[in-house]
Image 1 (cartoon, rainbow, N blue to C red):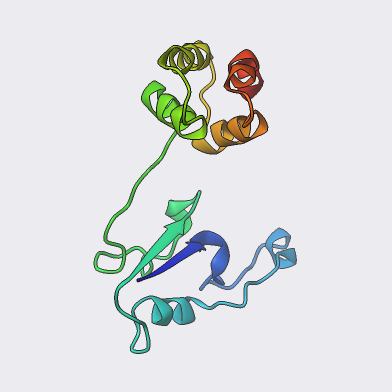
Image 2 (cartoon, helix red, strand yellow):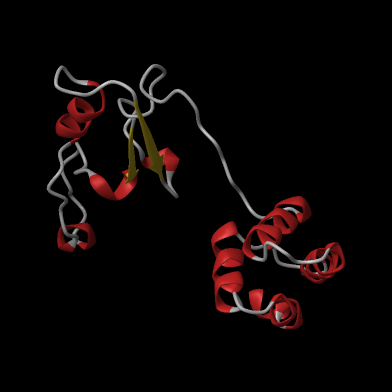
Length: 142
């Protein structure tokens, strides 16, 4: 089984001609929409593969990319909820105590501002050698 991942909104050229002066300075990708669609499910595409496509701007994607039959499953990650925080903390620190998991979850649940899984991951990587330090510096997340 093959596994592919594309940042889909950055991978392809836009179908529409750019009229805005500011957009004329952007760098074009070397992948065309047609080329991408052929790679995904064209005659030369392979079977038994999983393709992950990520985007921050689903509304900007061409409907040909996200039509039913081409994209079978969509997941919106959104911002972290307490249960997600606990799971990620436990994965980063395999032998961490339930007490420390709860401390970190409580510390992050007091924030007025929400944070993304990517922001949480960045924080946990920064303190990957010490769950206590990750808890102590939880306020750095916001």
